[in-house]
Image 1: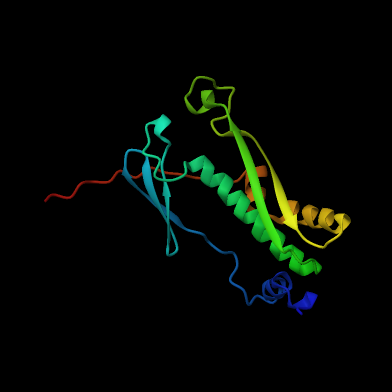
Image 2: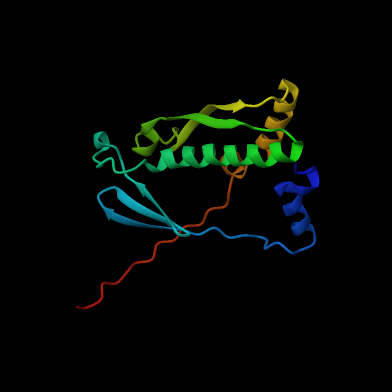
Length: 172
């Protein structure tokens, strides 16, 4: 059985404290449109497909980008719960997340400057199968809510800088 000092959290904290862990880290994602709304997203050696549903003139070959935001939050919640549960000595037998995002399309479709283009709200549930007490799970949730990176990204302003670079077609 792992001790608290053997947890991934404690091991990483130690590496960060003694400067043996690479920090800060940089995450790179590239996408390449495949025609219409269909896009391939490349992350390390992984490929994610994204598209719009048929009702939005897509071919429904993958989740739409806003669904990928929810997927990122759900997966990050599961990961963060596992990391902090291990550190707290809480065994999680099963974990799953169900999220619902609400979007008013008037913002995205430029019909109202008062309506955000993205989600107006995200709600959800984390389902945990564990022998842990309710109070331990409440403490775990507080830690996860504080330290989940994707939740943090969604709850606070993040500096984002995007530029456009015009490509020049090479002569054939």
